[in-house]
Length: 321
Image 1 (cartoon, helix red, strand yellow):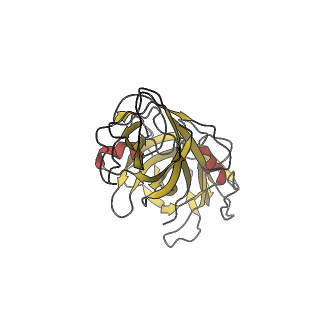
Image 2 (image 1 turned 45 degrees about the horizontal axis):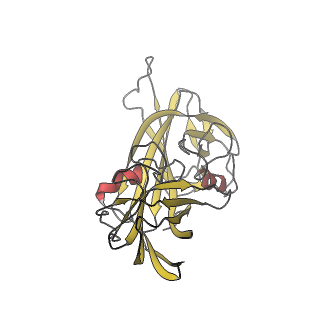
Image 3 (image 1 turned 120 degrees about the horizontal axis):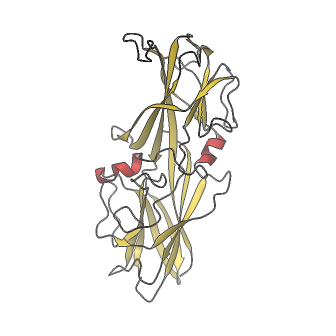
């Protein structure tokens, strides 16, 4: 069987919150000194940041936080702060989960701490990146409660805590297309699966390179089944599909292809293959992906006398409501 491509798409958005407080001689926070210098405000994910999703491996794109005093409006082509004051990768806290109030998304939140005095002065911009040098993943001007650019002043005896939340929004509407195999036309549907059983696949690795679990025999491995589940359901009676291979990322494409290689003993479903299935790795050992199924109509005949190769292509961009 020849190679065929089935697609899917996700959007990403990030938010900042900035707090400051004082510490005592032992380094402990002094009660009553914590203040919110800037409450939650959105960022701009740069073009270089979108490329990081194809190249950063198991390094979070928000590993480092950088703060500065520049007030130039963010642009997609930004690679650095205008006037950097300080950078830190000291992790203070991490939280993660899914949102089911309104639009579904997976999220991961990381707080980075700047030691007392390290970021002292007047700050107007903030960004995150996978490294202390090199291109930014995102940049933002610090905004006030009304959404206008502002500045904040961090005193020489204050610790600065910057929290960054990255959100993964799968495109919830079914994507559709057709492919032709052995002169037979098949319609396909790409669908994210949002059942609670898959929550950890949606949030666990948000901020890593994009990619599904590629091997193994488990409910989160590359699998096939006879029926495409409803969006809020789980796959039933999964059959191992073999292995998934990551193909080379092309800079600026903001998409990555992964090839299902189904050998003679793989993906053999009585009555035919009704869907392909792939997820991120909830163990945290591999990449960010979410949970996706691609349905086929009519079902694809597959048995121990045939092999199959399919390519799934995940594209991504900035989330827009």
